[in-house]
Image 1 (cartoon, helix red, strand yellow):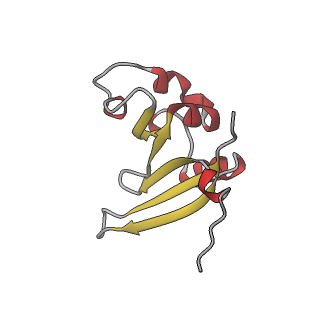
Image 2 (cartoon, one colour):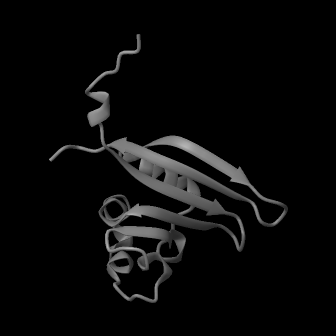
Length: 117
């Protein structure tokens, strides 16, 4: 007989995806809820609030950002970005990487339990 914890089904998580590619130095892109990214990376606040529809990271919906070019707006490297997410209570839930010479990439999915309220 399989039993389930009814509290486990009530857990909600906040997610941030981090994409890192070494081309042209290092390219770091973030995807996630705007308020989360603003919380963890406050120096990007102005760029994230930019509602211009021509920006690629703004085209899907008003609450989420897709592939925001983090190091195009602040001087953080990949280790600093990962450290910020870990210090904000996130943990690595999944990772992936691949590519060929000159086109490698790494992707990480960071999650944390959402605080009800």
